[in-house]
Amino acid sequence: MAEERIDAVDEELVSDRIADLVEYLVVSVVDEPDAVSLEVIDRTDASTIEVTVADGDVAKVIGRHGRTIKAIRTLARALAARLGTAVEVEVLG
Image 1 (spheres, one colour):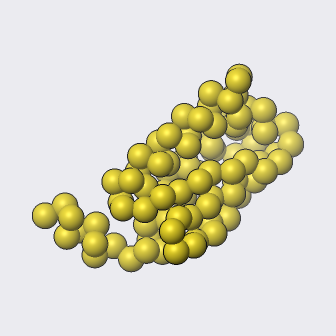
Image 2: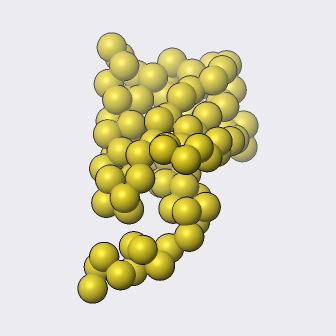
């Protein structure tokens, strides 16, 4: 039954759902949530989510030794795998 629901979801909506998760996580980490913007680039094999934040928040999103962005990427990839697709998350300053 879960397979039927996933198949019924449009490909654009899948990347939007993943982008919503990434946006929620990033906004909760930064000092300037209004400066957060996401661009979703859909390809046939995977999607790329480019996250733009204020210059002062780039370090917060990346975290010490990249731990925060690694956690965000792990959650995004887990959701993407569950929805039957692949995703990459990139941070732009």
